[in-house]
Image (cartoon, rainbow, N blue to C red):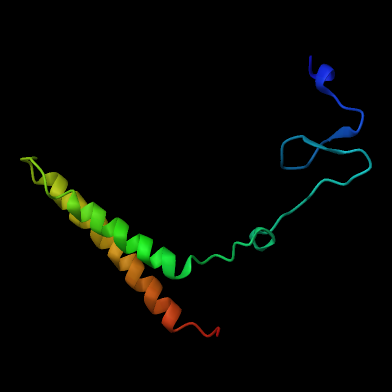
Length: 100
């Protein structure tokens, strides 16, 4: 059945540590792609901070509601606190970075 979909312009290639790949005949499969090749440099910048703080505020708005137990409030405070600590750590890390 798989032979019915085989195109003569492609070939199957075994890649160590990866799944079987299909490449154009005569081509070499990509062995490693770094995130920088796709434009990702590991930082979200200003919009990542804004999104993080908005998500923290949204978590805190879950405190408003008709629930009676307070255990979930403790979880929401803890999650929002951890998110805020990570965002503050990220701001501090960016200010003290030696690049730029």
